[in-house]
Image (cartoon, rainbow, N blue to C red; front, side, top):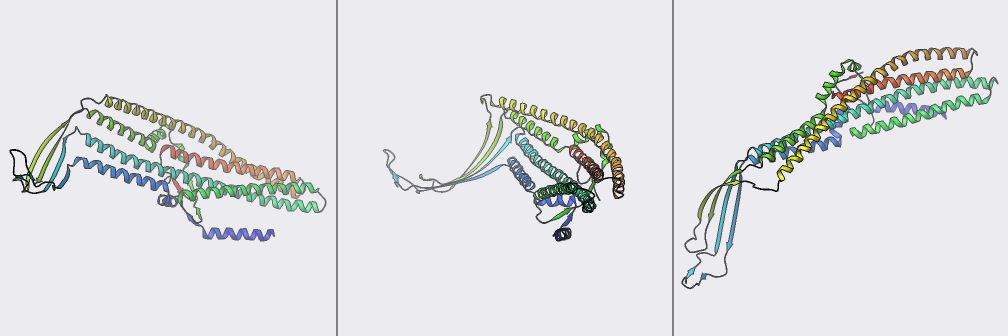
Length: 434
């Protein structure tokens, strides 16, 4: 039964490897750009902001309106007023049509400032799209690294289970010959079952990571991710240099600066709204009359200049300007806070790298020692010079050391990934395909 199950698992694995398409991290990202809903939402927001910008630009052009009216008087054909007898309507129909051209001659640049605000709004939405893309990249890399780490951990545990099963065969033979009691055989079998349980847990977690990647990318079919490596030399650069790069490249800072520009433009408009504005209008009118001698259509032209000036509005403008000043102060605080947090995060990353790198070097030395100790213990066990407890301890030490080395290796990878994120570097460009 176990043989049949093993054959089935092997065949299933072979089928998966054949059918699953291998994708690079860059290919995954390109697919994400097409399928991800957050990307689609951001693109629609950019389109809406562009339309708003075009709408605001139309305020620089004059407005043209057409008004027409038709009235039919059907009450009386003539008016009988003492001293004005015999006045008759020439026609019961009244028609008028006017064409109105209106243009603001001078507004102290308020309309252009409003256009600048809408333009900044478009830029803000475009920066927000970059933030969405950046976060998606980061999630893809993070999930992929977790996936690779689980795959490597699974390989270590499978290797360990295989070794323990070989030890079990030897112990079983010794038990059958009466050299050892049954409880010792049961103990090693229990150890194998514990490892298999851990292996199942790792497989489940691997499936969860794959599901999350599918959710982000919108991919439904099976796929494999091609391995990539990270450039360790990022941490060899100067800390201050990395900090300056982070302040320059961080998209989240750029969005705050844009918001600050929008508020300053809005404050400028409010200050200018205190000044008088001048507009001009030209009205061309075509109409007839219902009174005597005005039956024929006649034209009339009017040109007017209007001066608009708000004398008093309850000090509203001053309060609005103060509100914006507080909002600008709040943004300045947010900018300072983000720069401070970037610096703290970089200090933490650089210090963690030093510690993890030392542990990684130490783990590489330990793996050689534990591997040699395991080999010698097995040879001693085969010569009956040591018991199976020594083998189990040696095997356990080797597993722990190998797992520790793997954890340190991926801890370095995650630190590099986080450093890229903090400094605003392109995650894909800094990855080397294996």
